[in-house]
Amino acid sequence: MRAIVYELAGMQTFILKDHCTRLYRKLSNFEYYI
Image (cartoon, helix red, strand yellow):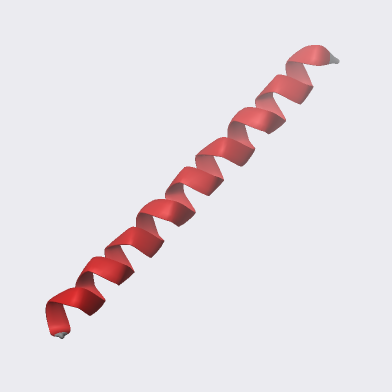
């Protein structure tokens, strides 16, 4: 049971990191256009 919880938490962090990376890329692209 605990292993499943850890795996879910890991997935959550991975998704969050991916989202932040995309957001950061969008922001840097935006700055590039200005």
